[in-house]
Amino acid sequence: MDRYSAMKFRDQIMASNLECIFQKLHPNEKIIIWAHNGHIFKKYETLLRRYKPMGSLVNPEIVRKSYYIGLFMYEGRAALNDGTIYSLSKPPKKSLEDHMNHNKSPVSFLDLSNTSPNDFLSFPRSCFTKFSMFVI
Image 1: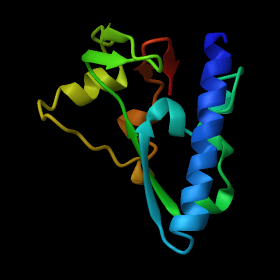
Image 2: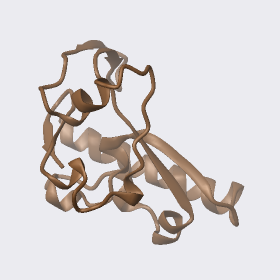
Image 3: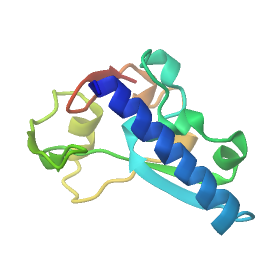
């Protein structure tokens, strides 16, 4: 299975699992969904053409009744689906990860629900992953 087929399959399974959790375990509750940004973003059309990530596959009711927390890394090590460990290079200057790293806190949180048109996020900014770099 090529990389994009594997990614598509993984996100479809993740969306199916999320639907099951929402419908059977917590049907009338607001839920928090936390995953890597690449899996949860909803407006994928501007970035991806090959597959839809989990965030765009789930039922709109789940989107309304959930709070998404996107995760990313600055540097270190991570693992692929097959367990292969790889090292992360530092992201490019002025990327979202670089910007967040400047606050020198071990953990950062950026609430995107209340950004203004003059906010630093209203301008194109790259977001780096192991396999690609996105402009958000």
